[in-house]
Structures are given as C-alpha cells and as structure tokens.
Image (tube, rainbow, N blue to C red; front, top):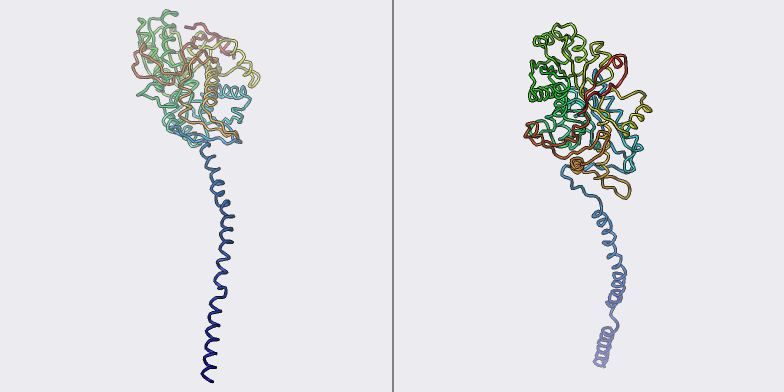
Length: 458
C-alpha cells in the first residue's frame, strides 16, 4: 500500500516538472523588447544623418570666403571701417610751404571723391617728415607701424625719401611722391625700392631744362653751382653742370653750403673769383634767400645772373630774399589748362589765396592714381568688407599708362634714361618731364604777388 502511494506521489512530482518545463519562458520578455529598441534606433537614424549635413553648410561658406593669396599680404577693411591713406610731408619749419602745398591738394582730391571710396569713408592721417633724413626715417617708422594704411603720399624732400624708403617698402606700402626729384630715387641699384613712385619730374629733366635755358636763351657760356649736400640739390646741380658742358659751356665752380648756414659770403667770394655768367643754386629756404640777399655785397658778381630751382619756388622766397631777387630765375613745375584752372578755383574756395609752392598738381594726381588703383584691385564682399592685396596695389600703379592728370600724360611703367648716360633700370617714374618751365621774379613777387609768370617752357 505504501509502495503504491509512494509511486503515485513520484508520478505527480514528475508531471509537475514537465508542466513547468512546457509553460511560456520568462526570457521571452526581452525578446519582445528588441523590436521596440530597433524601431527607436530606426527613428533616430535620420536625425543622426542630418547632423553631418548641418555641419557641411559652414564648410561650403568657408570655401567661398575671401582667401588672400597676395605675395606680401592683404589689408582687410570691415564694412564699417574707413579706407586709410596717409601723408609724409614737411609741414613744419622753413620748408613747410612744400608740405602745405601738397597736403592741400590731397584734401581736394579727397573732396572730389565725396570723401568716400568703394562706399567707405576716406581716412587721411599724416606725419611730419620735415626735409631731412632724420625726419623721413621717424615718419616712416610711425606710418609702417599702422597696418591699416594702404598707401602714402610723400615725401616732399629727396633726403627724407632716401631715408624712409627701406622702411616703407619693407612694410609692403606704396609711396607716391609729389616733389622728390633726385634721379637716384628711381634707379635700380641706387636708392629705389619696390613700392616707390614719383609723380613729378626727375632732375634729369629739370637740370637739363635749366642748363639749356641758361646756355641757349641767356647766352651764358660760364656757370657756377652751389648745393647744400642734400640728394636733391647735389644731384640737380650735377645734372645742370653736365648738360651745360655738353652744350659747350664751362663750369667755373661747384661748391656747397651747409643746411643752417646764414653767412654765405665766403662761398660767394669763391664763386666771384671767376665771375660766371650764371650762378645756379638749387637749394631751399632759408639758405637760398641768404645767398640772394648777400650776393650784392660781393665784388665780381655784379653781372652774374642768379638762378634757383623748384626748392625755392614758394610765395615766401621773393619777400625773404629782398630786392636782389628781382630779375632772377627759378626752374620748376609748369602746369596750365582748364582742368588746372578749375583746381585753382577749388583751392581758392577751400583755403583762400593761391597754393604756396609748385607741386600741388602732382600731389593731386598722385592721390587720384592711388585711389584708382585701390578701386581696381579691391575685392568687395557682399557685406561691404574690402580686401586689398599689397603687391596687387603696387602692380596696378606700376601698370599705369596714358593717365591724364592735371600735370599732363603720366606713365608709371619702367623708363629708359640711356639718353642721359644712365644704364641702370629705372622704376616708378610717372612724369615725362613736360610739365617744367623757367620763371622770372619781378618786383610784384617781392611785393607779395604769387605765382610768377613762366618765361620759358621746353
């Protein structure tokens, strides 16, 4: 009996275990969750794919953005920033008349553009370069330290340009001079460096014109020269002397005074020992007026014709020189025509009176050449931002040909001066030498009239 009961109970246990094994397994619950996870991943997949697409948009914009490839860099001008140019001029001291003359013309050129370029205000700043190497170097250092400046109008004096040029060129700037006339400034292997341009004549032209006038028009066969040691004066008197000798004349004396000298009697006495027909002294104020005023004190100079150059072509010179200036001559810039008359009317309206020296028209033309070159090479973004390549700006100015300015036709491409016995390559001379003349001082100029009349043009 017990055996049957035990056997029955054992069968019940086995049956229970088999039923448990056949019932649904709890492990199927995770299996039921897997489709939900896959659906979630499937729903998230599009969002994951869109993220890279959203990141690609800026990359596309970067490809379209301006990239500077200029050899010496670019100037970037934001939409709300000005186009910045500068001047380096002699605006204090005895030669301030040169700087005032150029600065006024620059301002008129800015006015003629409505004070704007490419939709940006024009900012004009400046440094006093004086009329010396020290002044030029100091001014250049300050200008070169400002990376917003695109170009410079200056200097007035060749000595300042000689000292300034390495710094200005090294900074990638362009410099356009309205009145540097020393020949070496544009000659390769001498003073010239990339980025320098001269808008006025070189003294290769002026010295020749002065010598031809003295020999052919005045009939002089002897002449003496005095300079002040500056590159301008020394090179100009050398060209005058060389051309005078070529024409058949004789140079009796070539001497110098120092900047700052006030007593010129010693050098004038030496000049007088040969009683030359002409004394050519291409120097500045105040030394020039001292030579003129003291010349009448020296025996042997009674018949000598006094002749200065464009460094003395200023409204203050005749008055500072006195009565001895009457009848003397000055070589220098000669500009005429309807456009020039219109410019003089603007000067009268803006400043009253006449320009104080003879180089204003060159400063005006140089400023406009710079503005035109900036417009030609500028890359303008949709928001008004401007990018200007510095080498591109240099190349644009060097490529100027057949430019009609107040001073005539200008051509800034390379020149050949072999006719003057010069074999060096010449770069950056924009003037042809046509805008030159000889002026004679009369009592009217000594009494305050300005400018004098031109009595000779080549």
